[in-house]
Length: 359
Figure 1 (tube, helix red, strand yellow):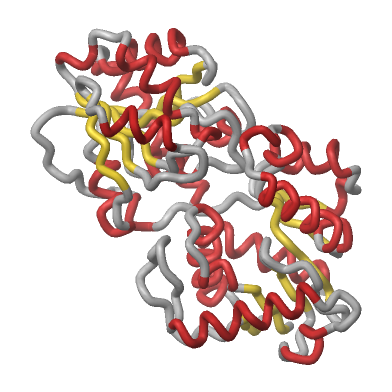
Figure 2 (cartoon, helix red, strand yellow):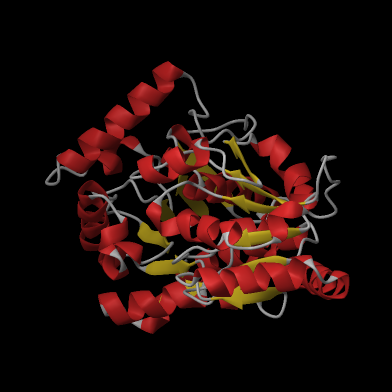
């Protein structure tokens, strides 16, 4: 069986989808038996993951993205049918709009935020998502959802036959399991993620500033600025008491930073999977996260949950966890156990079974 994975997210500046694609493809290579895993564009080796730049040379990046633009624009011409190798399955990325027609088509459903919370997205993102649903999701022979919550949202909002969607959780990079803490001057609670409205950093800052915890702990905010982040970035630049904004943290530095945290706090309004809290659990760090979307599903009994729109609930959870070593230990043990199901080898094996069923 020949399976072609669209790897174009690896050519773009991206975080979650790029991380997913990067690790998923590598583990599909490792776990394949009678399957031949191919990538578009062809990747013979993987450089270190970098969210800010393409995984291939500038010339190849320009050429491949130009080809994809042409394939998406020329809707009446099956350009990809003429340019990709003959395969049994083509797994499309979230960049494809005119997929090949002579092979089985699959795709990944990440989340439904554009439909559920359009106010948290740019108009361009909403239009792109509508095009993705129309040209790819509704036409696919099979779909992978990265959580049961995303699956149920897709069934309800897009009227997709439930039998077409299978839940396969992503994985956490092996380096997080048993990661060694980077030394720090003071204990800290940690947030990792983009600075944008959906991630809800302002409510976290409100909770922190109204607590007494800043006398003994820092709140470390790690992540690059995203869209509509000017107000939050200005607030971080003012250096609130007890808050350290460290900006974008390189992928190889994140495990140590995560493992060193006393608690990991992630008050996102909606997630398809929630990779940062899963990474924290793998590192054995107690987690505080939201009562919304997939986050209770992913964290299970290994986290404290709070209403992400309530600064007082977030503050209460932080104060409860950071002042209780026994609760920290309880959640630390539960987190490591829970995270074992988020191994990339498990995700790759289940994905190969999914592809075999289509064959």
